[in-house]
Length: 132
Length: 130
Ligand code: HEM
Image 1 (cartoon, each protein chain N blue to C red):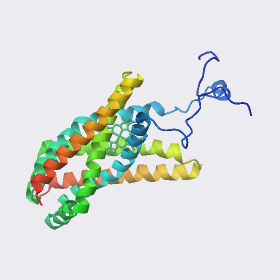
Image 2: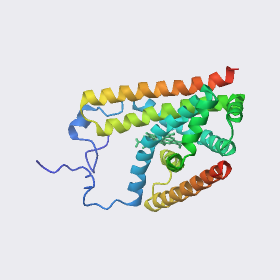
Image 3: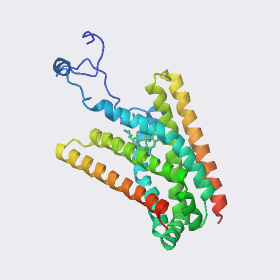
C-alpha cells in the first residue's frame, strides 16, 4: 500500500480496513470490455446489413435472418448487447440510487428484464431459422 | 470538520465542463438510451418472426417521420457510444491519457460518429425512399 503522502480518493478508515469497492468487480469489468470488443465487428456487420435490407419486403428480411451466418451473428449480437447493457445500467443505478432496497430492486428488475428481452430476440431468430 | 487532504470534485454549478467531461457524461446517456433502443431491435425481430402483417406494421412505424427521427437518434447514439467505447478501450490499455490527446480523440469521436450516422442513415433512407 502506498505511503500516506499525496492525494488519494480513499479515506484513512477505508485504507485501514483494506476494503475496496471491487469485490466481484473484476468479472463485471471484464464482462463489460469483452462484450464491447465483440460488439464492434458485430455492429459494423449489422449496419451494413441494415442498409442493404432497408425497405426490403418481409420475405427478403426473413430469408436474410434465416441464413446461418446472419442467425448466428444476430444471436451473438443480442447476447452481447443485453449482457453489456445489464452490466452498464447496473453501474449507473449504483452511482445514483443510494437507498439500499431501491437500488437492489432496480438492479433486479434491469437484470431480469434484459434477460427476458434477450430471450424474446433469440427466440424470434430461432423461430425464423427453424420455422417453415 | 477539517478539510480532508483528498481530491475535490468540481462544483457542477460553477464549473464549466471541459469537452472531455461532456463526452464522458454523453457516453453514459447514450448507453442508457441505447438500452431502450435495444428493445426496438427485439421488437423488429419479433415482428419479422410473427409474420407479414406484424412486420408491415413495424416497418410502417419505423418509416414514419417520427420513427425516422427516433431511429436517427439511436443511430447516432450507437455510433457515438461505439466510437467512444473504442476510446475507452484504448484508455484501458493505457494509451491516450495526455490532456491534449484525450481532447483530440474526443473531437475525432464526435466527428466520426456524426459522419457515420449521417452516411448510414442517409443510405438507408435513400433505399427506402419517401
Ligand atoms: C446497443 C448497444 C449498447 C448499449 C445498450 C450499451 C450500454 C452501455 C451502458 C448502459 C454503459 C454504462 C455507462 C456508464 O457506466 O456510464 C456502457 C458502458 C460501456 N460501453 Fe456500451 N453499450 C452498447 C454498445 C457498446 C459498443 C458497441 C461498445 C464498443 C466499444 C461499447 C463500449 C462500452 C464501454 C467500453 C463501456 C464502459 C465505459 C466506462 O467504463 O465508463 N458499448 N454501455
